[in-house]
Length: 422
Ligand code: HAM
Image 1 (cartoon, rainbow, N blue to C red):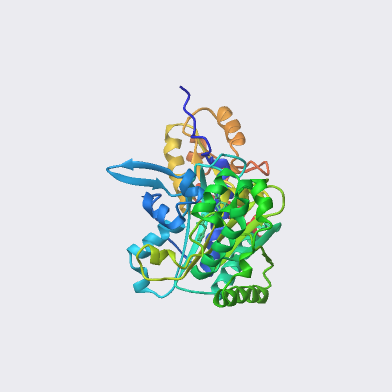
Image 2: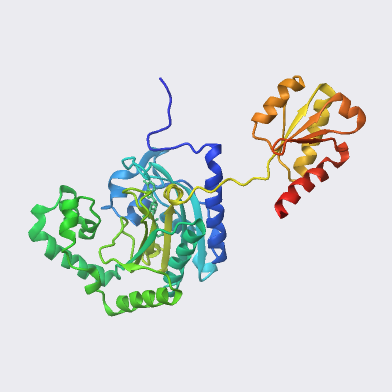
């Protein structure tokens, strides 16, 4: 039997990794400027954590979790990062140590969705969570941080959607308004949405069925039933976004697929067409009740996550910029030992070096060096050793010189430094 990667789970090979690392570095740099620090939590968590925080009637919990039993524990591969981070925040009593915490994470998530372009079963998220601030100032600042991040990546064709889901009282009122609207029309709803009508009518607004969506367009808007405090919070968010000059569009049908949200909700959609149907680059919102529901103290929270594969699809391919590396070609046994020492010196000087360990003749080694992608080839032969020099070939400039062995690092630095300042 041929063994292949699990469907919907991808290898990221070394020739692709440069783009990933660049993306991750820009993410870290951006969020760290806002005071966020990295947290790493386990990939596996108790299943109940996700059931309780994400919500039983969500697609993620109902259909998509990779769950299994081990040592009498019900476990699940994390489908997202918010629940695990909240568990860690609570478990380590971070709330007792500091009034406000800003955390970020990068890593793989798992959802058993139908694979498609931009939709995988193992995918990577970059996310951030802010604990202890009720906003709306920090809500606006977080959205602005996201906009800045996308700008740094060169993703310009993007739309920011915002909405408010209100607090518990608003949600109850809205739930009733949706029941009043959908119950007489339930026969027109998809089977999934008929079930949602009983369990959690808000989820109907999330339905992917075009028929359901057409009905949803006529459903009451949550913005019409916000109570005064929720309304003030939402208006505050919009005013702060205006002050930051962050463009956005209010979308009262935005509900997102997870049950834990309260008040502020946002989503970033790519509009450039590279993403096809999976155009949600990322999203998030407030979840002021989660920590309390996990039996912790009431703690306001807000966060977001971005899909890294989707960001890479939306990003323009950037040329790889590397100063180039050195192919060290030893001719003979003594030269090999010298080559090892020389390569080690180059690395200590911050110059990438690889030694050819196949030990053949120069006429075999040189073509290998030329085809390797190296910028330089350093030939260490018996003759060079005897004269205290090395042969340095610049494979890009097609030039050759013979610097003294002791001055090789300095000479390479001169060539590379000259280029960097040119
Ligand atoms: P989410 O909207 O479920 O939110 O996921 C965030 C992003 O992850 C999506 O916008 C998308 O870019 C990416 N994503 C989700 N599923 C897949 C998939 N199957 N394949 C590829 N990419 C995918 C959350 O996960 C929340 N935890 C965000 C949050 C943080 N809310 C508060 N704090």
